[in-house]
Image (cartoon, rainbow, N blue to C red; front, side):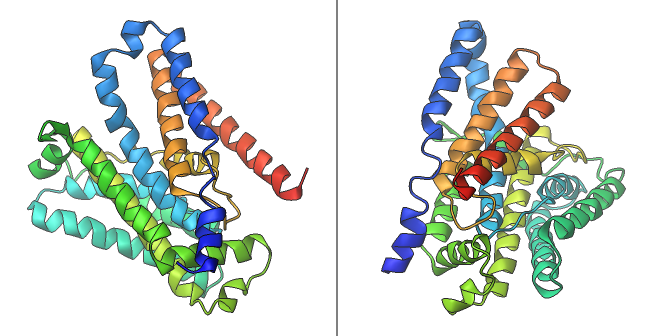
Length: 320
């Protein structure tokens, strides 16, 4: 990598989110001490932690791509629900699974194209897509009353060489994302575009000779495809289509990315920080479920965490 590459993807990203690792460990210890040991360290609960965390990890990693360039995708939750509905339509797996990712790529392309071509704010563009996908999903739901293909179920619930399949999902997702962020010119371009936007220099990417429109569209395509992958995983767990399964996933993903150290204004962030942030959110949700905290209170707590993190980021950016 060039000196510029090291500066953008190394110095600006390597340390981001690492401060969350002690918090993750402290949270696990706090849950262990506050809950009955048999409840938190129960074998069934521990085995469920990875499958419970995996959809959020996948979605957060995808969301990180658009946040790095200063964007946002509010349609990922609906994309997850839409994926489960499509997979439950009935039909051969060889047709349904590729169709899911083709449709996801089309959604991501549409988001990116509207944002770059018509200068529509990412929040408005992706919020509109959220409503569109949610409406289509609810139309499909009565039709998709069957179960998802068996191969999807076994790919989630099964094991290979004694290792649970969700572990392989995580390895594949993180290896692919790591290659894109740190091992490709595309990843360098994300940091460059995001750095320019966060600095108020709209043409900063062009100073590097980057076709920023193409990279922005590609980032939204990747984000949508990662959401479809998370939907595929969830479909294998619930074995049916559900228009509500992706509800508020977009906010959980944004919170995970933010607490993982990625600057919501773009240009600064890291993959490992995002993963740690997602694990913190998943562990927190697991603890609240075990203590029977109301889902409404859980949503309130998550919203408060996001607000706090954004406020801290703003103060840091202003040097306060």
